[in-house]
Image (cartoon, rainbow, N blue to C red; front, side):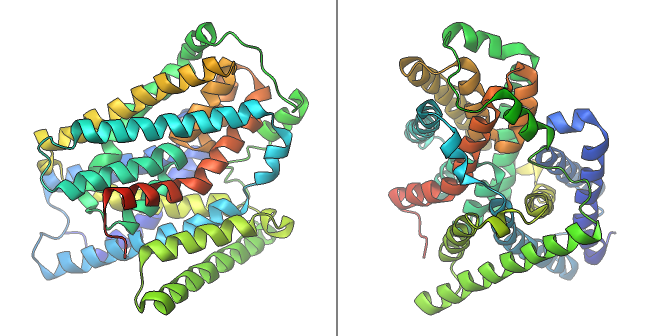
Length: 402
């Protein structure tokens, strides 16, 4: 039987191996590190179900492992949020035209309408606790406007059951991955027929080429170089300081640690900090933040219990499928009315649904670098507002946040 401490080491070793694979093999760059991390966690969970190499539930060893897992889940996300936002250049909006803003607003509106409509359609289906389905709806608000980062933050904030988090992420990837493959395989050509409008961008192609060439997101090369590592650690210390401020503010207001106050505090502070050129230029903070997200992903997925998937759990998959398809259709209609080009729509929707790291591979596939910066800018704003939107949705649904 594997000890809790050996498993703890594995939670950090597996993300490192994933990063090494990501750096070496092109196929992994199309799949994405988060999906790879979640796949590793699922494999661990399935092997444990079959072989029982982890401590059995109810034992002292299981309690120790569960405590380690919960602590990692609680710490990794708050540390990752500032790190991933520090490098975000929200001034990219000054290089974009109103069409980019139209794609952003249309995408967010489409996702929100689909989420709300889907919630009322599926909420009465058999799913155990009604609040758990509310949790799913809130977490999906985060992942479809800001990616795994906001999904994880909202899951912690609303105290969602770890197995619900695992099942939701698993079904989200099952539903979303085919859409990404469809786009990369040439599906964007269908959008060009529906949106036959020309690109309007103030960003020159050569400038976009430089951004693409620099691999703005998830370029893990050189992280351990002394000069880079030292500045990266400065970013980590700043992130920990913001976490401390969030915890202190929570204790001051409520007399206890509240995830809502902590997450919103560090998100706001990180966005403000990103306008400082010195902080924004700290090297590899995004990649370091992604490392913590990968740790979180492996931990969450390793808690996946396949025996708990039943007809009620499948409701989540149908809900996610409904949200994705409906949001795409609504966004297409909105972009057609706004005369937005197909390529800008494609990168914008991918950036919201999957986060900015997925934009460069899509840009390469469609062969139009002019929409790169706009696509990244849309995703950055999604990073910034996803947690706030999820908080608003949770409040509307009546979930306890304090």
